[in-house]
Image 1 (cartoon, rainbow, N blue to C red):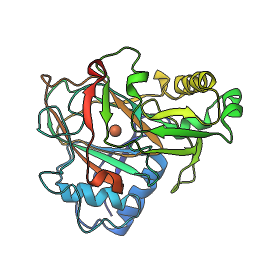
Image 2 (image 1 turned 90 degrees about the vertical axis):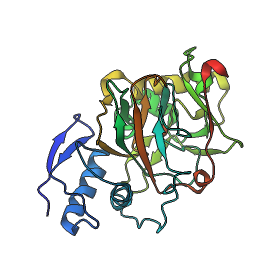
Image 3 (image 1 turned 30 degrees about the horizontal axis):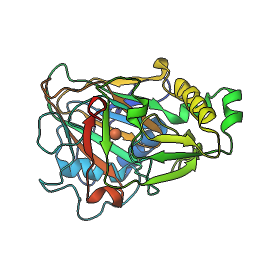
Length: 289
Ligand SMILES: [Fe+2]
């Protein structure tokens, strides 16, 4: 078994791990310890970690105890999932991203996301994280009473409405309008934690509530979720692997500029929802909408 050294990143979530030697497969005991850490901490960071796409893909599925599909759908140059301000055809090539969990609008949830620093100039804009599990645990009683038993409606992207006039905010436009309805207090399918499952980028409304009341309630929930005291900021370096629970945590980023330092991050989804395998949205700044 690998001698893993664990350093807590915040009092409530996140751990930096050293001592892992990447190999496929990992031995059972190391894998058991990593899964335990992932379920407990929701966010694992490995720095100066020299891995290839195959290990990133393997670890993404191994941490949630699922067999990876034999064929990685992004393992071809045309569909490779890169977050980049330099690479052609990359995801989210510029702009500020509001808080979200990827694909909240999907029924078939994506449980885990990872990013690996392929080309990172300095200072590269960070990725920000908050815990939806912690937000539910600490939700004030009055807000909890207002959302208990309620359903939230999620759409692809409502960033423009939520941009607050910030024209750097990135919006993503899909060619259809998927949406889904899920409990505001959502049970995590693997850990059983209760999550405050609404987000700034995709939650359009609390169902069966007048719009003004729904808007006001969502704003109060966002104030609580995104309290700056609860935010962890990952400052990118080349060869960082950051791997997180896409349901238990939400992520965001400040503005990324095409002419800024290189920021090319290789992304994995586990599992990758079917609805993302064949298409990508069009990206635009809120200022251009
Ligand atoms: Fe995202």
